Length: 612
Image: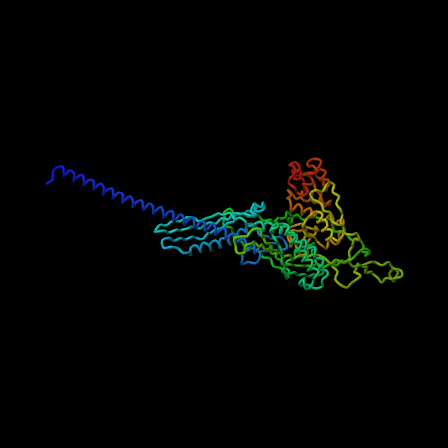
């Protein structure tokens, strides 16, 4: 039998036990909660670790893919690896733009990168963690024409890969993250080699060297392969390739070694022809391949769109230049007349120029960048010139002892005919100057002083045109208008981009053959002034355009007047009026070639100038 004291002790003991049990339960619950929090944090850490690991894998894969792609694309000169080597010179420069190169590099890099990402998905994965990486949808090389030409991308450039995501499943939890990366690619000189190849192609010295060889085809009798039919020309082409290679090698530093392989060489010639200068030969039968790229749109919204370099001529059909009436020939005495013969020689050749950069070893099995560029050249030129003597075809039989007709009358020369009737002459009998052809003088067209005392050149119309063109520092051709733009009866020549051969000076060759040297000099200076006006500047009016050509050529083809003035004046008088009231001497020279950097006062003066 317990007393009250014993009952109190029992209650205290039970209470203590209850508190202990409660504390134990609470502590057990807390430990379980802490464990769950710990496991949760551990899982997050594990997921984050995998996330960073595979993002790092993507970054490394992008760097490797970029190195692999620069090697791959450079081997094809900017084309994809399945395409032929890209042509950079197809007689004239046609090198790929920065955007074209960016497109093919981006596509190649994207394919390589996604192959790496696919391999990551196939890698061994545990039962409690699964990883999936989406492929990148866009790769872009952060290179612009501006940064390229400044040399900013010579040894490093940035590449971005976008559109990929990473999905991670771990112990019934899932997380996803974007997998876009942007990396700096270093120790890769792809753009350095591209830039120097591009500058070399734009200068196109190879064309000049081949033009210097064209006269050697005159020594060859048969058309065909240079190595089989024309060894002397073959040797000259080899020298031209060597000279072009030297020009290319000089543009690089000591780490780059360049060479070439000639693919083929072809030559032929034909009698006569209307070719002027050393010009492009369309569709040669051999050595005629030019390989272009076929890029699509870049996958960036702010891609660089390069504007066309084509220039539109200012000379439309209504701007025919009126000329003086055709000169009347005096009675034909044949005393100083000759016939002319020449050949149009034609040649085409192809070669691959290659440069290897050994400054850095890239993260690729091939280690070094080898940049290959295809070059095709097809030209034609007038060469093999010769002259023949002419004699009179008389109206009667001549008595050799008296020099008169057998009936005693004075003989009359009906026409001039070649003394050598055999063969084919390219011209009829015509006056031929005995003066030697003068060497062209190198002048800066824009620095000619007033008054203008030009040199008068001698030779046939083609020789005179070439010398004046060289003096003015122009690169334009003279074309025959036969079957082309059909110059009106009142005109002799037309400077236009609407002709069969593109921009050039188109003339009636049958008229040019009859013009004396003095008139040919004036005519060609007038037309070549139009070339300068059209290529470099833009005249505000047709009157300014034609006054300027008359001014620089010393021609007087046009009559002008100021506003309502009834007096018609020639270009020299217009010049004096302008000098006295509106323009300085320097502004006169600028206005004549349509340079807009003249005063408002001088500019307004031309607005008041009209044709009579």
